[in-house]
Image 1 (cartoon, rainbow, N blue to C red):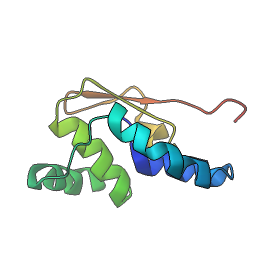
Image 2: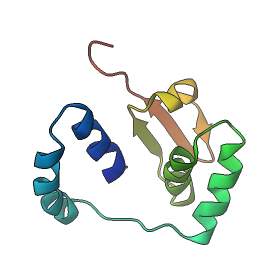
Image 3: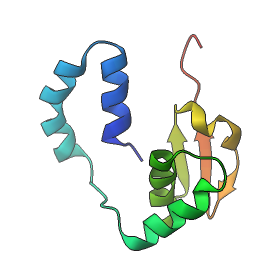
Image 4: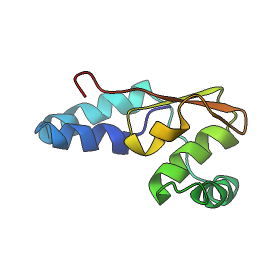
Length: 99
């Protein structure tokens, strides 16, 4: 599961935000966009009790509600969740090279 928000945020941090906007159309054709629904929002509310920020809770809730087996992230907010199953979804926190 990849979020456009995370990719764009990283591209802004590395000073290539303008280039990201140009390739976003290609990303739209490569990835399936999953809209939020009520069940996902309710699950996100439950996940926020685990000290996840709202956007992160919504992202993880999408994976949990859609029954994705694994969830990969570079987001440091998930570091403490590495190797844990949330619902049936295994969280995998990936460290960035050099950090």
